[in-house]
Image (cartoon, rainbow, N blue to C red; front, side):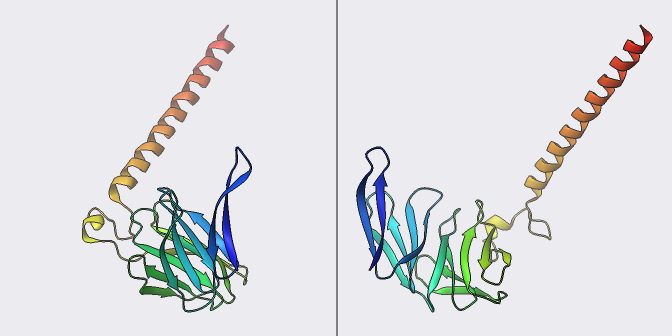
Length: 185
């Protein structure tokens, strides 16, 4: 029997224990603070992070070592384990919606990026792979360039880089002007 012990860091006492069938191999608190995702044996569980009750539990196709909930919408999760594949599941139904193959050893860790646009997987084969998430919903795809980046974000990044470059040129001009004035004294 395994489990997660939640501690009060102020008192040093155990507040709650989340029981699992097997030793737990990963735990993650969702970005919004609503869920604790755990992987144990061939099960991925989602716990209410505020009241500690079990919200969902899904049996996986193999023993999993890591699971991660998509942070933006919370509608899917990824899991990786001993079968060398990275599986993507629907959070609400537990149905597998995608499977990524490419590792040559068990997958020991998976983690979504903060925006949910990609996730990484690390394997015993010594590789880390970055996977782009599936197709976006129609309303999310407006303004996407062919490579999948948002035009607005691209424009903001370009403006930021331009602003920094302009600031650099102004600073360089001021240094040169100050140096010329100092030499003229």
